[in-house]
Structures are given as structure tokens and as C-alpha cells.
View (tube, rainbow, N blue to C red):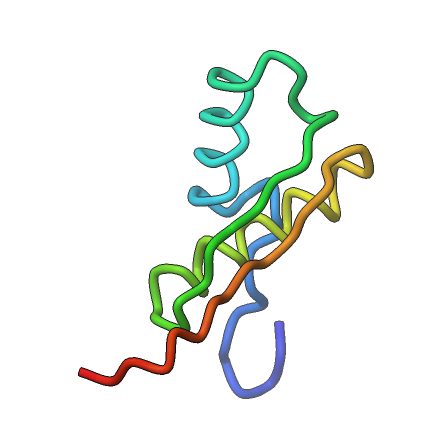
Length: 77
């Protein structure tokens, strides 16, 4: 453990989001992990977390193809 008292981040398999994402993909995609996964990224916290979880899965599953997709429509709220 670092001296500052902060704990190391959990390993990908220990992260509940990564574990849940892997389980759901296996349920929904018969060829998982031999699939190409495209994650739409808006720049918000939820899509960043999903991309992070997808990257952790891709690091663990070499057959998983991962792409991040972002489209700038030029619209502002």
C-alpha cells in the first residue's frame, strides 16, 4: 500500500463494473470474446466509465476488439 494511505485501484477482474460488463457481453454475444466492441463516448462520466471497463476487458481478453466512437455534431446545449 502506498505511504499516503491510498489503496491501489482494483485489478480489472476485481472491479464490479468490469466483471458485470464481461458477464453481460457473454450472455448477449454468442461469440464473445471474439467480437468487435464499439463504445460510443460522449465525454461524460458514464461513457468514460464504460470505455474504461471495456479497455480493462480488452486487456484481459486479447480476442476482443475495442473501438471508441465519438461524433462531434457541432451542437451545444
